[in-house]
Image (cartoon, rainbow, N blue to C red; front, side, top):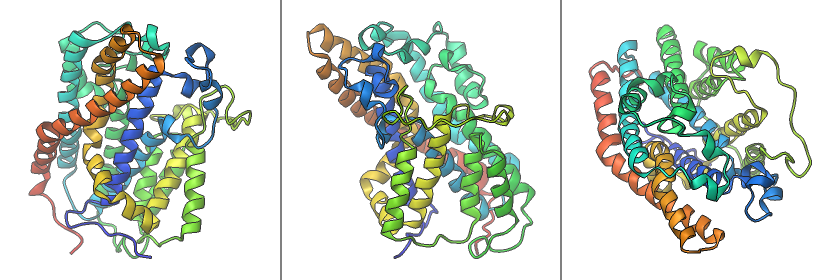
Length: 401
């Protein structure tokens, strides 16, 4: 069974596909949070139909769990960044500039766009229709262009803006993404004289990242270390279909541990938490995200080692979603509380049943988000990637030759 190799520009097509699938799950999750949060919470006060209360505790319903795709993003970033750093030797300052531009330019553009939508199209009454308590916890600020510019230029990447006051609540992950990148840059730079071929045998970096992944087990940064550990290991060894199926089932099971008060129809998987996690940087503070982190690692390892999964995720529809994934992640919540909200309120005003309102909102949200992400890919994402490479292109010395 062959494991797919990277293409000539060192992109991993199957990982692009995995990233694309994860980004779509995030869009679906937030739309559910907005229009029928009881599917996630199991809270009767948020239910519209009644069946959501029991459904919220169902296993394997991973597409209603927002934690799993986010954890996959972190592991994937650790892996891909490390694969890049293994084959190049770049000045630390240039690496930081490259990453800042790569993340910062799309964040700035989408934050300004989010500010405009908040100013002219925000629907504060949507929560009254949808019963979503999540909507009452976001967009609590007054419109301020200086605040939006501050968030877009440095606030999001440094984690300085509380989620209730953010012009894009999804940006909470960007500080973790940036910090995780800096952590990997520092370790690779400090160990740049490490000998050995990481594609044939483990070296010092392998053990550093393994220890770091263990030490940061209760921090989101531990997922970056886990991805780096996998990247620094020797080449992946294929696994069979039976093993892959068992691993994926376990991953999706752990990834579907619910927020419901009655998890998995009465089975409580909560375990005691240690005090240590809360003193770590970017701590994972709840047990659901711990399970999601374990699930993300299991699923990622399976994809790395199972050829059929790689071939499926390398199909053009999935890789195209992967290309859209970052702008899709950045733009979908601002569209949710503006254009999608207006559509839903209009349908409700016309007397449509809530089931129709919710289904239409899902279609509109996915459609507008994908369209906007494609436009951003052309006018923002692509230029950001090209500009970020300017700062390192002349500094890169391949170590793979």
